[in-house]
Amino acid sequence: MSTYRSCVPCPACGIDVGMGAGRIAYGASRYLHCSACQSEFLAPQPDDARLAAIYGPDYYHAWHWEDARVVRDM
Image (cartoon, rainbow, N blue to C red):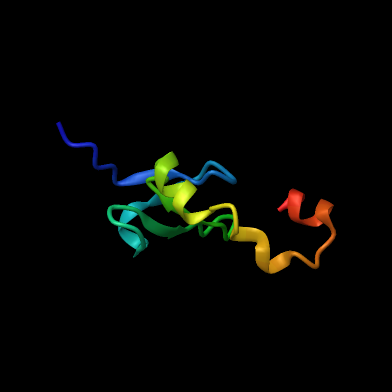
């Protein structure tokens, strides 16, 4: 059984966004653009292992001069 979906809900506003309109990002994931709220997101969402690789312990190091609250809120 295929898991392909032609539309996915925008995580910000819930409007259905077509999968065909995205640009290729990571493997089967695509960057999608919601025309309703202008958000961009990956669909399908990468699994926890891929997210850990993308956002490793040094991810926010570039913002080390920022106030800790600013980085935490990001």
